[in-house]
Length: 143
Ligand code: FES
Ligand code: FES
Image 1 (cartoon, rainbow, N blue to C red):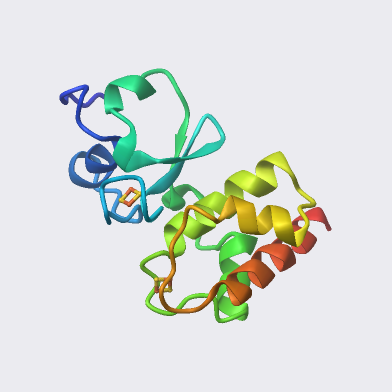
Image 2 (tube, rainbow, N blue to C red):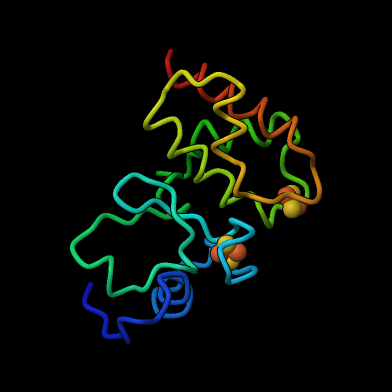
């Protein structure tokens, strides 16, 4: 798709306002809350801090990429199963951080899961359910 925009505009704003991909949430805009997390060349980044001019020719994945053909990704499935989604505002960013982790390390230990989501703030569900959901997703994905 060809879209024209200011290269200094944030990737987050382009995803939401130019491409209509509203799954990536807008929060602090300062790299502090993680709700805007997407994958850039397989690594989790805060899209609010990335000027869109820097992503040319690179691979960007958003939460919309995870559910295919009406089927949710195992990470999403386990978030629901464990009650790790309350208001859900943090959830897309949290899921994307987990997705980046499991791409790089399919068998993480709980400490590695905690580190991977340390940049994602959740004020509702508590991190325990989120960590458990990610460990269960890792188990499911290796089957
Ligand atoms: S909106 Fe990007 S880190 Fe908060
Ligand atoms: S579920 Fe509400 S902030 Fe995480």
